[in-house]
Amino acid sequence: MSRTLQLAEQLISRPSVTPDDGGCQGILGERLARLGFKLETIESGPTDFRVTNLWAVRAGAVGAESRTIAFAGHTDVVPTGPLEQWTSHPFTPTHRDGKLYGRGACDMKTSLAAFVVAIEEFLAATPAPKLSLALLLTSDEEGPGVDGTVIVCNALAARGERIDYCIVGEPTAVERCGDMIKNGRRGTMSGKLTIKGVQGHIAYPHLARNPVHQFAPALAELVAINDAGGWDAGNEYFQPTSWQISNIHAGTGASNVIPGSAVIDFNFRFSTESTPESLQRRVHQVLDSHGLDYSLAWTVGGLPFLTKPGELVEAVRKAIHDETGIETELSTSGGTSDARFIAKICKQVVELGPTNASIHKIDEHITVAEIDPLKNIYRRTLDRLEALLHV
Ligand SMILES: [Zn+2]
Image (cartoon, rainbow, N blue to C red; front, side, top):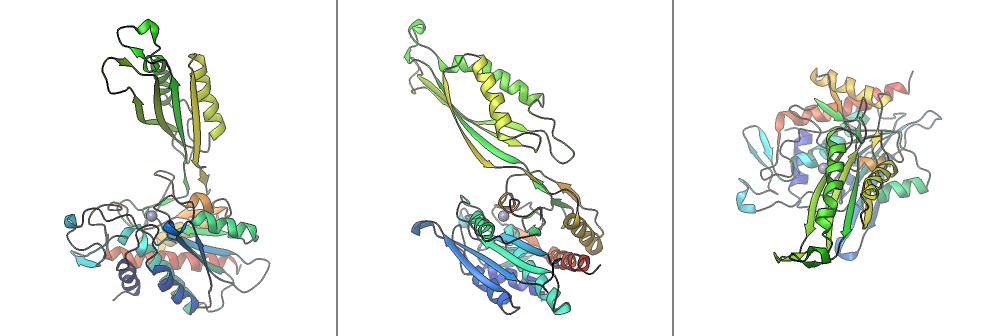
């Protein structure tokens, strides 16, 4: 039986819904400790939402040209949803039709197993590498994410520790392992807009001011900007910035009352062509030009990041090609990930993991035939990065 599969099953059988680690970091840490890794557990968060983070590092042969590669990921999983809808228990790894079923099979316990086995194999073949190796794990990626990877990154930054390359094991493949990697992610920024009106009787509109009616022309203008790709045109790596309303609330529930205010929630997913400031300025311009009485609270959830083709992207691309014959596609699509925190302390970050079709779903699964190739891609990437230090 594949050692990666075996370890993945061991992890899946540990229930670890956010922020629970379920002992997964202990299992992985023990394997790494045997290889000479130094382990550091960083707990964070309130007692009723305690997050466990692990930073494990093994220094390479010292030299000015030494480089550190970190594998990063999360041991927590999303809730199972109704148990009766699962064909087999989500925390009992089960094989059917060449697939391994269980919560976390794709997102992302198999990647974690593949990281560790790839490192084991790499060190067996190269016992004294120049490359420094590291693993960064959190149990809060699927939750609020405030006590997880960002805490470890801040601690590393405060100590002046450097990461040169990082591979995040998020499931990025569309149909086959290796067909897509993420070399960046869009930024996310939310706004909560309150349009202030004057409440009154529907029959006496001259004594009231309807915030919904007042907002309508501004809404039309914002939608028109969005539909025309008017925030920015994107670039070689990013789609144009997009703006979407998620909620609109107004009204008392009665049909004869003009509401006193309207609350609109919206979100930007933005490219590196825009900044939070440039988008905020634009929205305020539109609202101000319509003479609205409003307040607007902004929350920047994450800045966009981009790793342009360079040492890491090339090493990963070649590793994928050598293992699978696939020319991988670079993408920055999809939601945010913890890579946004890592990108602040590491210039080259990519996400590479298994197919993502069943993540967060009932009956989450991974194709068993995809597991060893994933481990081999990680392993081949290590070989290629090590080779760069020997030229
Ligand atoms: Zn994930």
